Amino acid sequence: MATTDFRTDADLSCRAAEEFVNLYYETIDKRRRQLTKLYMDSATLVWNGNPISGQEALVEFFEMLPSSEFQVSMFDCQPVHEQATQGQKTVLVVAHGSVKFEGNKHHYFNQNFLLTLHTTPANSVWKIASDCFRFQDWAS
Image (tube, rainbow, N blue to C red; front, side):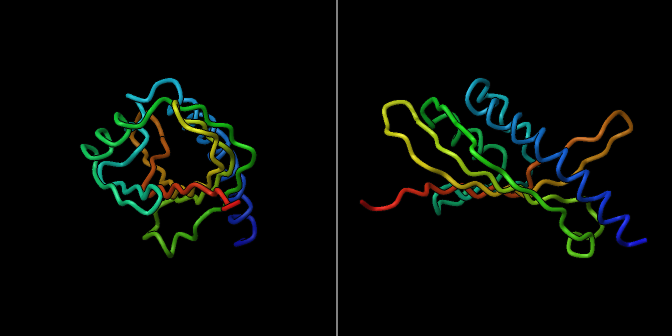
C-alpha cells in the first residue's frame, strides 16, 4: 500500500513540478508583477545569500530586479514525506539553467523551491513556501 501511495505522490510531484517550472520562469520574465501570487503570504526567499520574507518585501525585491531571460536546462523534483510537513502535500523542486539580466552577462543559476498544495472548494494550487536562488558561476 505504501508503495502505491509513494508512486502516486511521485507522479503528482512530477506533474506539479513541470507545470510550476514553466509557469514560474515565464512569469518572472514576462509578467513579473504577477510573480508574488505564486508565493505563500509567509514565504521566504534567499537570493544569493540575502533573505527576503513576506509579500511586501518580495514585491519590492522583484520590482528592483532588471528584466530577465531565464533558460532552464534541467529540473528535478521529489515529494516531501507528509510526516515532515504536518500532513501538508509538499514538493521539492530543483531547477538549473542560465539567466541574463538586462545590462549584465549570462550567469548559471541553481534554484530550489519548496511548494505546498493549497486546496479551496474551487481549485488546488501549488504555492511557494521557500525559494533559494544562487548564481553558480565559477571563478576563471
